[in-house]
Image 1: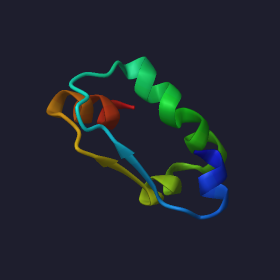
Image 2: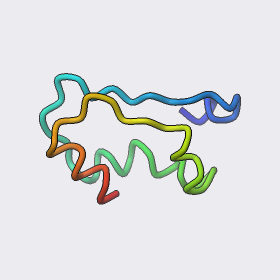
Image 3: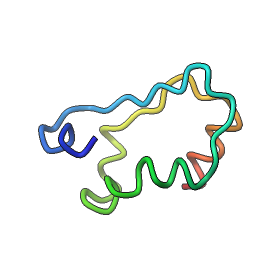
Image 4: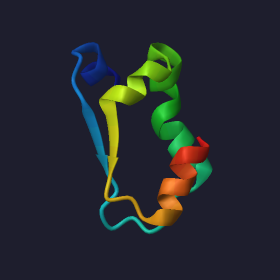
Length: 61
């Protein structure tokens, strides 16, 4: 993902068919991007088709 952010691309993370995710998984998925680019990067990142349980975990992280 980092290379796409360096190109100023928008990132869409599609969770279609994913019914559950752990907090550690979501943290590993986005933490490095947040560390390198700050929270403003969330404006260029979207989470698609999230089950309610997955959405809750994303919001926690």
